[in-house]
Image 1 (cartoon, rainbow, N blue to C red):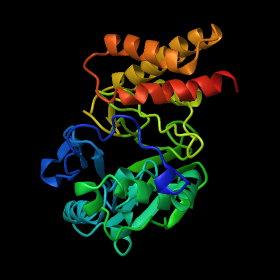
Image 2 (cartoon, one colour; image 1 turned 120 degrees about the vertical axis):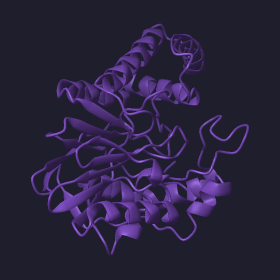
Image 3 (cartoon, rainbow, N blue to C red; image 1 turned 90 degrees about the vertical axis):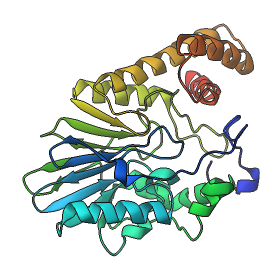
Length: 312
């Protein structure tokens, strides 16, 4: 993943092993209202499909995430326009990864696209290479990315932006480096709802896009700090990047896992164990503790990240 040519770019071990990934199709018909005038199009456990938000006020509607590619985004836009019934449309994304943001071009004539500066930088500097890498997965993913280009935001904020939708203010907040350099959360204070992007997910091991020397922006240490701060805000409902919508435990479960991962990795690093041995031991231990979770290939990436941070 990242700034190098895709032919030289590593794909995570096991990411495409076995059966091909299913078509990452967004299904707006399955939208669920989790608060008044606040809908979530759930990802239904399908890989590379994010949870998508539609947040309404009296004057405007904010869409959170687009799904991957033009056709998905067209469906999301059509659904949002139907919900909006003439209200102004805004779009934001939680970070630059293709399944979250690489449909934003579809909204260009219909919505104002708002993101934080670090995410805008990621879209500009890393977007093209991530696009090529995802196309290299082939199949339905490549087809959905035909003709897609990295999007350009209309409005860029420096860390925080309060969006007045009319009777409802939505807070866009850059978190600082965690899952990516440009992570942003979306808070709906009147409803007690928090959209986290891939800072939190349910039913799987945390995704560490750790691919040195191509991409090393993920930080397990800072990610932990971010989740501590978000959990301290005590949201009533947490919409993760992927997986089922839940309560505050969505945040604390991921935070506790990251703490486990850090502590088990650093304990072994202190004993001068090699990274391969650490990854094997920590992976076995955490799979035993969380046997129902998916995405086991990300444990090794997390160990590599935290080994680097141990000596930083």
